[in-house]
Amino acid sequence: MIKLSPEQREAIRRHPGVPISVVDTETGAEYALVQAEAFQKVQSLLAVGEFDPDEFLPLVHEAVAEDIDAPGMELYDDYEAHRPRS
Image 1 (tube, one colour):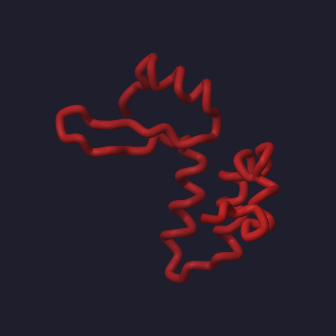
Image 2 (cartoon, helix red, strand yellow; image 1 turned 180 degrees about the horizontal axis):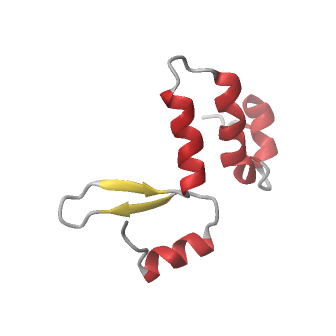
Image 3 (cartoon, rainbow, N blue to C red; image 1 turned 90 degrees about the vertical axis):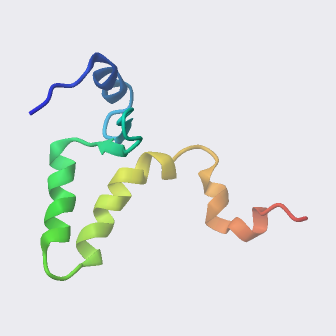
């Protein structure tokens, strides 16, 4: 197991519960640093033979709940009424 760098630890502290993007500077490959518990939940859903949206969707909602409830997002409840016209 590798240890977190101070930079990674600070990013996790500032954005709890959010995947942290990391890059391998030698290859340019991008990775997502996520808490093991969240990874295991998603992994268990994907490891099952059949995909069950009823199990997956609550996890998605939990992951984006803070963004969905952000001020101004209520405009998307009726997007067509608020969509800029050209």
